[in-house]
Amino acid sequence: MRWDNLTAPPAEGVPERAAPATPPLPLALPGAIARTFDTPEFAGMTFYEVQAKSIINRVPGTSRVPFEWTINPYRGCSHACVYCFARKTHTFLDLDAGEDFDRKVIVKVNAGELVRRELAAPKWRGAHVAMGTNVDCYQRAEGRYRLMPQIIAALRDFANPFSILTKGTLILRDLPLLRQAAEVTRVGISYSVGSVDEQLWRTVEPGTPHPRRRLDAVRALADAGFSVGVLMAPILPGLSDSDESIDATVSAIAAAGAASVTPMALHLRPGAREWYAHWLAREYPHLVPRYRELYRAGAYAPQAYQRELTARVRIASRRHGLHRGEHGDNRRLPEPPPPPAAEQLSLL
Image (cartoon, rainbow, N blue to C red):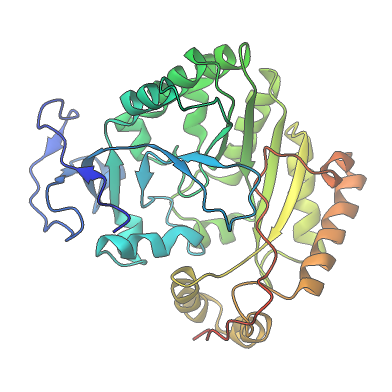
């Protein structure tokens, strides 16, 4: 069980305005403390507070991401992105990959103290730590639980290099800490902005800040001296992959002062695949045949489509002065290429 290192936290230190809640606990979290809050932004949500036994996690050796260690203070995400690849991880908790992922969030309330303990361990060698690689560490829950200031302060105090990928504007709250950390170690910041189409944003990423607000945050971070890369992801076939959509998004990214842009086509792993398929059939049924064709062999679109998409983003990047986006940057998080063997999954 991937979650057997979690236990219930003590009852003290309850966040303000906690409302009584006694929802059933997931079988994998028998001792967690479940809470709901009587504020509109958390309507319908349950938070399971747990005490983690470890917090700096090694990335599986089969992964091709350019980092070996991650910190994930939350599981589940109120961003509710219909395509989120991390959805399947909720099934390890006796929760579903759909609405439970969006509405039932696990909070590792002792994350800050654990980071300090693990950074101080003799065996730790100061490796780069990536955050925001599973679910967003600046989702709405962070505004209440405030785990990231403790984590960043610990990384700063140990001069440990780290990076953050986010869609959240709450990162600006921690700008003073980020600047302090950047004085003693390498700090990478990346934003995810797949499209600036407002109608598409409202349906595909309903819990996230508006893309323009994210780009305002990119500008604020750039003005503070950070070289901010933008992950243009995911680009959705038939929805945000037209030349007009790509040009509008790249233009806005460049205007925000981003240092680079990296495109990524939608990929649909199990868990996300089923949830996205139902959403697509409901919102854009005319696109279902195209998706069946593109994803008939597995989680990834054909490499020819990916290469063509990258080329069109590169052309737009040059047009808007972001040619630096052609070069790799280890602060961004490219996905591994499609596996060599077809997976033969069904879409719908």
